[in-house]
Length: 157
Length: 189
Image 1: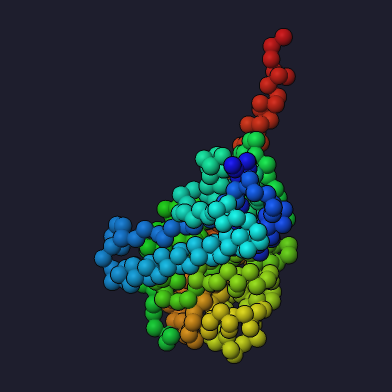
Image 2: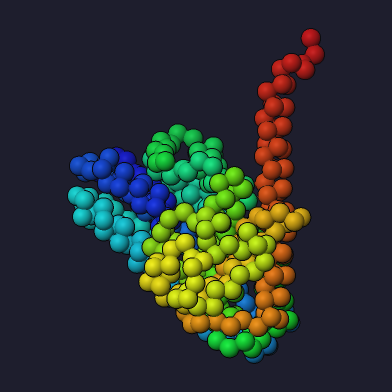
C-alpha cells in the first residue's frame, strides 16, 4: 500500500541531478513510497498560420519540426534513464514512474497542478540563489512553495 | 556554409511574430531557439541572460545542445567569445582556429564547428546574448548578421518588458497582502 507519494520535477540540470541523488539516498528502503519524476517540455511552435503559410522555407521548417519531435523522444529517454538510476539504487521498479508531457503554462503552474491532481505529499525542489533568469521568468521555487498547502517540500541547494 | 543570404523578410516575420504573440517568456524563448535553428538549418541556438554583478551568462532557453554540454560549467561573459565586451557581434567561423572559447574541447566534442554570438542590449546596457551554433564552418552574410542584430534587439525589448511585468506583479501581490493585513486597523470603532 502506498503511504507516501513523492514528486521530483526534473529538468536535466546539475541541481536536478543532485536532487535525484538526494532522493536515492534519503528515501531508499521505504517500500511504501511511490516516486514520480516529472518533466514538462515546451511543444514545438505551431506553424502555418496567417500569410506565412505558403513561403517555401516553411516546408523546410516543417521538416525540421519532425526532428524536434525526435528531440522530445530523446528527452523522454533521458528521463527514463533517471528513473532507472533510482531502480539501480534499490527502489522497486513498480514504485518509480515518470511523467513526460507538454506544458501549457509556466513550469511552476504545471508542478502545482500535478501535485494537486496527483495528491503528492512530498515535492523535491532545487533552488540556486541569485539566478538572474528568475527576474525574467519568475521564481519556480518560490511560486511552488507559496502555492502548495499541506505538502512537504524538500529543498536541494 | 558560404556567405549567401539565409534570412529573408518572410523568416523574419515568422520569428518576430513568435516573439510578439507569446504570453510566456520562457515558452517564447524556447520557440525562438527552435525556429532559429530550424530556419537557418544549423545545429543549435541559445539565449543567455547576463548576471550583471558576476558577469555570468545564464541559459534562458536552448535548442539543439546536449545536457552534458549545457551543464559543462559556468559561462563568463568576459571569457567566452566576448561579444559583450566589444558590444558587437562576434563570428567564430571555425572553432578549431580561435582562442575565444572558454570550453574549446567541449565545443569540439559537441560537434560545434562555428559559433555566432550577438549581444542582447536594452537602452545601451547588456542584458544577454544570442548564440547560434553550426556543425560546419560558417561564413555568414552581412545582411543575415544585420537581421540577427535586429532580432537580438527585439529579444532585449521582450526581456525587459517581461522583467517589468513580473516586478509589477510582485508589487501588486505585496500591496494586496499588506492591504489585508492593515484591514483591522481601519475598522470603525
